[in-house]
Every structure is written in C-alpha cells, then in structure tokens.
Image 1 (spheres, rainbow, N blue to C red):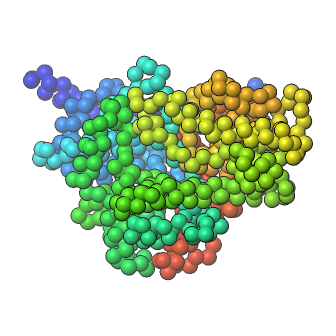
Image 2: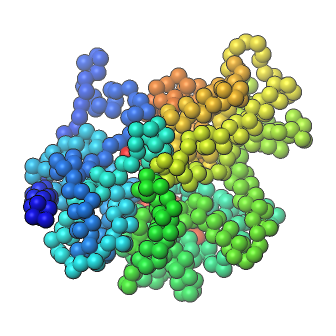
Length: 605
C-alpha cells in the first residue's frame, strides 16, 4: 500500500512539473536544400509519398517520459465533476474541428498547459509533424467520465491535471496487436474518423438530396418525407444544428445556451423538439454506452462513438455541450438523418415502405452526381452518358454503369455507390475484415466491367482495338466517403485481378473516388486545368498512385483550386434558408465568413 502511495506521489509530481503556462518560443520554419543548391521549405523539396499523410500523436510517454497508467486516470476522474471533463474536452475538440491549421491548435494547447522545459520539447515535436490534441482521446475520456466522475469529492488539484488525463488516455488507445488484420482495422478506422470530408461538400450533398427539386421525383423532395414520417420539422432541425455547429466550428464555443436559438423565427415547440431529438443527458448516455460496449470486442471500444453520433449534444441544466462538431453536422449532412426516417417507418409498422424510400434516397444521390459530371462537360455535348443514355445505345436490358464519359481517344466509366463503410470497419479492431469491404466494392466493379465490354461490342463510339493501349478508366465513386490508402486500394486491385474483373489490357487500374475528389476535379476543370482522364493518367504515374485523387492533385500536381461555384451555391442555399429564419439579409455568400473556404486536407493520426 505504501509502495502504491509513493508511486502516485511521484507521478503527481512529474505531471505537475510538466503542466503550467506562460508563452513559449516560436518554431523556426524547417528548410531543406534542393539538388541545385536552392534552399526551400521542406514540403517543396521532398517527393510526396502516401506515408507523408500519416501523423503520429503524442502520448503521456512522449511528454512526461512515462504514462501514469489507467488506475491513476480512473482515480483522478472520480475526483472531478463531469462538467469539468466535458467542458475541457469539448472545447479542444471544437478547436481541432475548426477550419484553422491543426498545428496552431497544438501549439496553443502547449502554451496553455505545459511548463518549461517540457513546453519547448513538445513544441519541437509538433514542429516535426507530431500531433498533440487528439479528439479521439478526448471522446474516450468523456465516455469514461460519464461512468467515473463524482464517485469521490471534487478536488480542484485533479481538475488542473486534465491535460495529463488526455495524454494518459492517448497512451492507452492503441489496441492493434501484431496481426495484419488488426493493424488494417486500426488504420481504416483511424482514417475514417480523422477525414470527415469538407464541410461545403457535405452540405451541398445535403441540399441536393433533401431539398433540391431537380434531384427529387414525382413524389417531391425528401424533406417532405422527413417531416411526414418523423413529425419533426426539418427546418427547425437544420436551423438548430447549424446554429450550434457554427458556434463550435467557427467560434470554438462548445457550450450552447438556450439564448443561441432566440433569434430563430420558428415555433418554440419545434425548436424544443429538435433539441430533444439531438441531445441526451448523462444518465441516458450511460445506458447507451453500456449497451453498445457490452457486446463489442475490447479492441473496438476506443472507436465506438455511436451514442455520441446519434445524440451529438450533451444536455445539462443550463444548456448543451457540442460533443463533436462533426457528429453534429453529420446529423443532417450524412446518413443519420435518413436513418431517422427508417426508424420512424419501423415504429409505425410501415416496413413495406423501407425499400421504396431507400431507393428514392439513393436515386436522388445518383442523379446529383450525374448532374455534376454532366455540368463539368457541358461544352462537350453528346459525350456524357448517364444510365438511361447508355441503355439507349447498349440495349434496354443491358447491365450498365451510372455514368460514362467519352473523350474520343478513351473513356472514363463511373459507378456510383451510396453505401457506407461497414460499422465493423468504422470501429476497427479485431471485428474488421478488409475483404468484406473489398467484396462489396467488387460488385460495383462487375457493373463497370460489363459496361466496358458492351461499349467495345456495340462500338457506338469508335474505340481503338488491338493497339495494347489503355482506353478505359473505371472509377467507383463513393458518395459517403471511403478510406483510400495503399492497403485498401492495392487489395481491391489485387482481388479484382484474381477474379478477372476489369483485367483486360486496355483497362486501367480501378480508382476509388468520393465527392471531395470529384469536386476538386471539377474545380480544376473550371480553372481550365487537366480533365478527369488526364488527372487519373497522371496519378497512375505518380508517387501517390495508391492514395486518393485529392491527395495526388494537391501533393503531386501541387494544385489547390477554389471550391466550385456550384458547391458554393448549394452551400449558400442551406445558410440562405437559415438566415431567412433569422430574418437576416441573405444576399451574397457565407462561405468566407464561416471559415470553410478551404478545409484542411486529409489527415491520418
């Protein structure tokens, strides 16, 4: 017992010496000498590789020289109030989720909490590319706090150690063992969590499939379905989400009081209903987390945030905490909003409507993507074929892809997928099997293969034969995002080769793209740059051939185009409705004011 007390005292002393505050020294820019002697910033000299996208986070071991351990962590949490932990964690999560550079957030954290010489040592590591503030660790810490906080009297000295608790949590996150499957699961879950996609892209997709009549059908737009099935006003829901999200994302204000919604010209009951739908108190979270994790492999627990994703607001007596701005935005911008409709239909005993509504939702998404491609090549009439046009040329009963682009000398053939990453993949750990994901993608690849064969056979456009050159460039476009990396992309191509899918000599290796990739291609085209087929050809020859299209365009081609005007218009459409609810002037754009003009690129921690 005495030994344990001495150890705790030693740990407390080490941590206290490392934590504290005043300002530190600015980091010097790291420079490298090019082959011709010119000295430039490092990123302009070194050849980019996929591994450059990986960032390693700092743990208690890196900062303090040792990790205080799980028992110390639990003991400190028990002497804090839940609000202490949530206030600290949500503040720094909001900071990291904002549009500013992550390095600046890490340096701010170091200046705020670390004393010398620890501060200078940590800032040097940040300068070399390490990450300090880790949202995953903060979320896990909040999950633990919901169960642990308040077990003992509150101790102010423990509260001052919250930065050390975050780092100690980080030391205990890595649950990958030495198996390949476990490592792949950790990488896939990590990349999915840390790359939510750009804000304008997600809100443009939301606007298209929920509100834009161009992508609806004879039954109307999907926003009408939401209110009629759930009984919740989508106008109120999106207004509450955007009002709370913008406070956290733009202002770094994670705590929201009721006055935040006073200016909304919406019935107060609708606002209250929306807030109840989006929020949970600690007691309910405790039940949800326990129910989810009791049947989950321990290795997946550090990635399990489903209760927070479903209820991204923690309700307290005087307001709400935004647990993660990305979780909150995804309540309208991703599948959780549609899942509300599915759940309402089940609750009402209307299971027969599930398939019909799902098909409508997916078709609206596909029409949106087809319209993007058609607008990109509006100057080439008759060269873009959607599913209906392909069937017209290839036969009404033909199995065809969703879009094909004829460049004269070659084709890009796209198959659109609205499938989400499997939950086991999202949660990583031992439950994930990469080949389960690959098998689902292979079904889409078969559609591409069948389309290419029919284009060859029907020759409704001339296709050179026998030259041995590549004439077809297949693309699977995943509207909900996908973790493209050397492991997933290489394995997909390997499996397709073994199954003899897309294996002809005139077919290029398949590419995986998402809407962010498509929009950066659109932006490059708007600026008079290379076309989609030229970018794909360039990627196959570049060092980032096994990374995403966006990574290749930004890191290898060194292009950083502005957000396409079409995306701006749809993004502004969402905020235009909310500004009108506020009674504000809706003239002009809002992208620049929101700080999302250029979202950060991909990061993997």
